[in-house]
Image 1: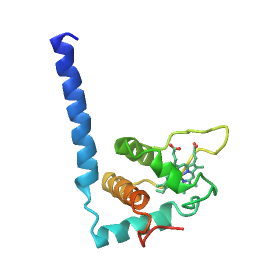
Image 2 (image 1 turned 90 degrees about the vertical axis):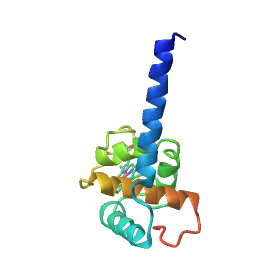
Image 3 (image 1 turned 180 degrees about the vertical axis):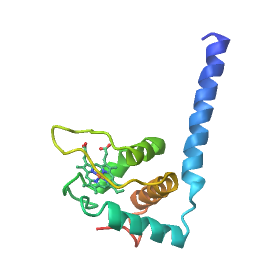
Image 4 (image 1 turned 120 degrees about the vertical axis):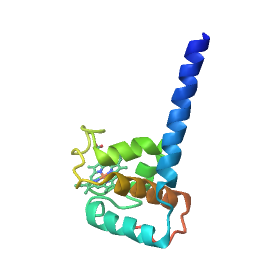
Length: 123
Ligand code: HEC
């Protein structure tokens, strides 16, 4: 690979690492932040999602697990949901989340998938 391209790849990798890191550390999950996330979930997500089973939308556990290696994509999706399985589901319509609410949501949902004993996991 020519040197110029290597630098380019280096910067792309660096930029995505920084972005992902920023996303995950943005809201350290204090008890207050967890409560805030749970409240947003109750208000904006619970109407259509159950953790372990399909409801109006697909089961949340699997939804989140599919994004574990790309938190930024989940953040993007929550900010601006695009149809994913139009053959199977209606497009997801949700209230607008602020940038920090979306970051908090991603961090909290990831923590719930990683720790199955979390007490604040929604049903
Ligand atoms: C009005 C119902 C509704 C609400 C409210 C809702 N969802 Fe969804 N959700 C859906 C549907 C339907 C799909 C499947 C959409 C598709 O396949 O195009 C979906 C899919 C998803 C996915 C999977 C995306 C993928 O790549 O497969 C995630 C993650 C998700 N929702 C998270 C959330 C979160 C977090 C909230 C709250 C902020 C939320 N949803 C609120 C209906 C809803």
